[in-house]
Image (cartoon, rainbow, N blue to C red; front, side):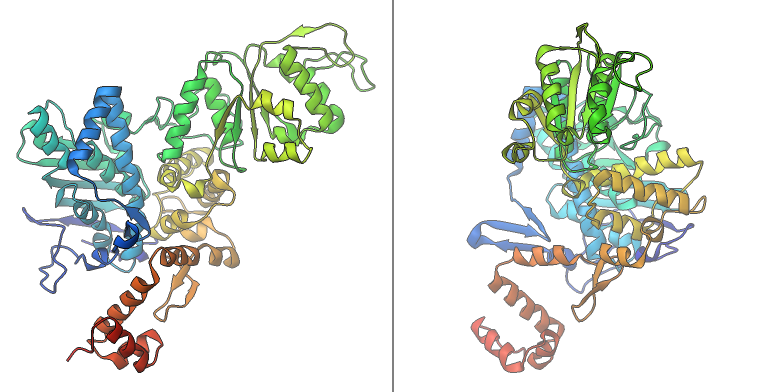
Amino acid sequence: MESLRHPAARHAGAIYKYTWEPGAKVMVPTSAEHHGDGPEISDLVSCLRFAPGDGRIWFDSERMNLIHVTTLGAMRDTLIDKVGEDTARGLITRMGYASGVRDAALARKVRQNGSFRDAFLVGPQLHTLHGMVAVQPVHLEWNTEESSFYGEWIWSWSCDAEHHLAHFGVSDRPTCWLQLGYATGFTSAFTGCRVIYREVQCRAMGHPHCRIVGRQLEAWDPEEIAAELRALQPETFANRPGTRSAIPVGMAIDDPLVDVVGASQSFVSTCHMLQKVARTSATVLFLGETGVGKSLFARTLHQISNRADKPFVAVNCAAIPEGLVEAELFGVEKGAYTDAGQSRPGRFERANHGTLFLDEVGTLSPTAQAKLLRVLQERELERVGGTATVKIDVRIVAATNEDLSQAVKDGRFREDLLYRLNIFPVYLMPLRDRREDIPLLMDHLARQFCRVHGKHVSGFTNAAIDALHQYDYPGNIRELENLIERAVILVDDGLPIDIDHLFVGEDHLASVLLKIDAMGALHSGTGGARADTLIENLLRIPYDDLEEGLITEAMRRAAGNASQAARLLGLKRSQVTYRLKQMGRGEMP
C-alpha cells in the first residue's frame, strides 16, 4: 500500500509497502512500452550528458568517469594486498556510501512529484545504470511513524562478486563491499534514518545470486552487522554504533566517550590525521569556519591520546578580559592585586600532564601572545605575583576560524607564535562542502536531543530531509544542531520533524528553498531546485549543447510543431526554424 504521495508525507502514519513478483526488474525501458513494475527511466537517462570535446561526462550536476571494471578490480586487489582486507573493505564501503548519499539527493530532485516508490527506485535504477549490478526488487517497506524500514533486493552480475570468482574462486564471506555501501548510503540519506544493509547471500560464495536485506540500525542484532558497522568506521573512535549520540559543539562533556560522526572524504581524512598525531605530544592547530566542530575534535584527540586519563582543560581566549589573561592562564598568588584574596592555579597548571585547548587563539592581544609564547618555549611559568617557577607538561591544542597567516601579515598575530602552534594543522571543511555527513548527523542529533528533552520523534518528513540536504549552513554543524534541537522541542511526541519545525520565519524559510514553476520562474517552495545550483549546473554544459538540448526537448513536447515549440521557449517561430536548419533538422511531418 502507499498511503501518501512522496512530497506530501508530512505527518505521522505514512506507510509504504511493496512486494514484487519474482524476476521483477527496476529498470523499465524508456519507450512507451511500460508494464507497471516500476517507473520509466527516461528522466534518469536525460540527466546523462557527454561533452567529448572537453573530455567530460556529467550525470546531473556530478562529473562522472567511465572506467574499466578490471581496473576497479585491480585497485581492490592492490588495497587488500597493501593495507589488509578489513581496511580495504572499509575504504571501498565508504566510497560506495558517499556515492549513495549523493544519488539520494538526485532521487528527491528528479522525481519530487512522484510516488515514494518511484522516487526510491531511483537508487536501484542508478545503481544498475552505473553498470555495477543488475537490481531485482523483492520487498520494500517504510513506516514513517515508527521510523521502521525493511528492504530486500536481489543482485545479479555484481562486478565485485564476478571479479572475486574469476581471480580467487569461491569465497567464504560476502564480497560486494562497494554495492553494499551504496545501498546503505542511499537508503539512509533518502529516509533520514540510519539504515544498515547486510549481504545475506553472495554470488562469490557460490549462491545463485547476491541478496541484501536492509533494516534500521536498532532492528539488527549488533553481532549480525558487526562487520558492516566496522566498515563504516574510518577509525574506531568515529561512528560508533552504540546507543550514545554525538555531543553537540559547545556542550559540556564529562563522559570520556564522545563520538564524532560523518562519512565524507574530508571527515575520513580528518579522522586518519587525528589517529596519526594522537599518540604523540605534538601541538595541533584546528582551522576552519565557526561551528565546524573544532572543539569536539579537540576533545576527541585528547580522548584517543596517551593523556586520556589526565585533565582536559578548555579555555575560550575570546572570553577572557585583557587584564585577566595572565591570571587565567598562568595562575595568581594571594595579594598579587586587590581582588586576589587567595592563591589559585591557572589553566596551564590545571591541565598539567593533560591537554590544554586554546579556542579562538587568534583573538589574543599582542601582550597575551608574547606571554603565551614564552611559556610554550620554556615549558615553565610563574604565577602573577609569584617568584617560584612551575614546570609544566601540557599538550597544546589550539583552534581558530581566522587566517593566521594573513593576521601575521596584518601585524595582528606574532609570526613566532604561529610557528609554535602550527606544527600539525588540521583543516575542518564547512558542512556545505561535506554533505555526505548530513544523514548521519541528522539521525545522531535527533536521538540525542530526544534524550536531553525527554521527547520521542519518529524521524523526518520528506520536506524536512530535502531542506536539510539543500541548506548551505552558514553556521555549519552548530547551526544544524540548533535547527534540530528547536525541531525536537516544537514537534509533538510521536510525530516526524517537519520543515516548519526547523525554520522559523517566512523570510528565512523562503531563502532556504526555491522552486522552478512551469514557466521557468524561481519562487519559494519546498522540494525545488536552488537558484545557485541551477545556474552552476547550466554553466557546466557547453552553450551549443544547451541550446540544442532545449530546442530538441521543446520540439518533442510540441510533437514536432515549431510554432508550439517557439511558444514554449519564448522565441519566434522563425528563430526556432533557423536553429533547426543549423542543426540539420526540420519540423516533423
